Image 1 (cartoon, rainbow, N blue to C red):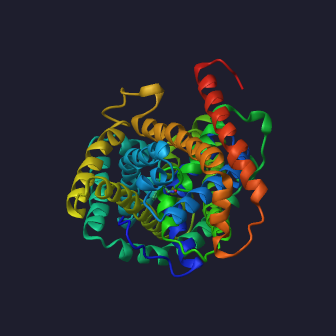
Image 2 (image 1 turned 90 degrees about the horizontal axis):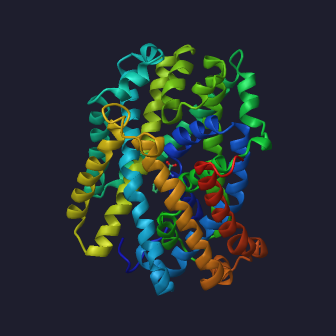
Length: 453
Ligand code: TRP
């Protein structure tokens, strides 16, 4: 990202759509449903929505305001405001380095399923053990991952993201419609009602530290927070734009897609597994195990399934391109590398680093740090450790060094009065930083067995 004169979005709508297309991706379609299934359905959903409207809102508006105020890339934005907080920029640059490789591995799984449906094997994919057979095989997932990564690498190298993004903008509304359609179909299957209830009915006695941490990590991940991306978007926003309204809209769209994806998947797991504990906690594979069964139960299921995975591929590839682009532009910014050099290094690095995540389900399954497969481990380190730490640092910085007032002035820069000043200041000074520390401590403690809640 050049830090000189900045282009800006031509309208609020353009800004919201651009930020929403970074936010909406595998996080909503793949990650949210499996976490919700694993951590108590309605309980997880309620905690997630509570955190999204408080922590998520505060952090997103903060990042966008920092970006627009400084007009700089994340690496430079923090240090330009206060030298001591320059580490926030650096920490934010580390997160996409961890996420991009394993995101590509999941992207590869999606490509595989597109291929499966294109070749008319939808019925086979609905069989038990199909997905397990695929991810435990040595070379196949690796092959699809490399294909996926190469594709986004070429796009970043050629600098033609805009073309892909435009295609994706046309695809996203279709994806949304298809999601609504599949969600209704899945939720109205005989026997699905119990699953629908499980998904929407919270049981607060079941809230654990681990579940809240998972919801917090999911929030950062899904909204593309705590890695500087929203700072970048903010730096391209016009002063006259309505920042508060934009943030509310981005959050709304992102959460809507996640909730629908959950509705598409969770009641169906219930139907097909009788609500068994092990099926509900299938983890990263859930979407790939459950959806083919749903499509198989539909008339024209192969067509619908093919269309669904194809559209998911678009959601995934645009997010992967933008993750790759984040690393590339950080390298160009920091070391003055050319785009060609930075893209080549990043693609090669991502290929190398994705290999353990891909093999972790098969050949390397005995390597299981903290009892997790390697993909889940990288996912845990970035979303449940680094992002909360950076989220905390950002709130502490704004709450006590920069002052919430400075952010509020930036929000109001376009002349629109900001109605939630007190709420924002309270969130960023107390609720978010204290909450994040409490969540981290309680989850570490319960992980180590000190606490049993
Ligand atoms: N929010 C994206 C998703 O839900 C993932 C993501 C996190 C992302 N940070 C990002 C995408 C930065 C693009 C850029 O899938």
